Image (tube, rainbow, N blue to C red; front, top):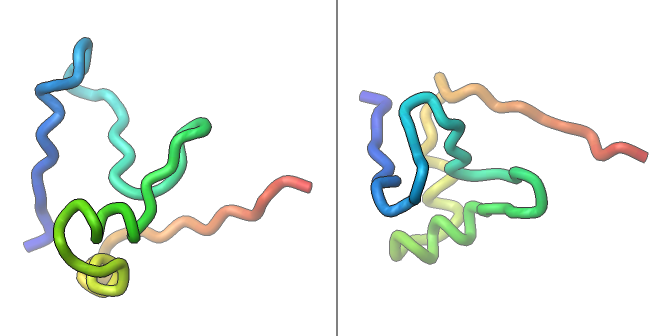
Length: 64
């Protein structure tokens, strides 16, 4: 099963339909696989290899 839950109840003003970035960049903020590994007591490699094949991967090229 490809499912997980993120508790955002501590964030003021959050509502159904709001965008949630679990890993990646949003504005000047970034959450890396290393961050997730540290927060969950594991390694970035394990975070990356546990993502299912059905998870869409989007590659973006930096603007020059």
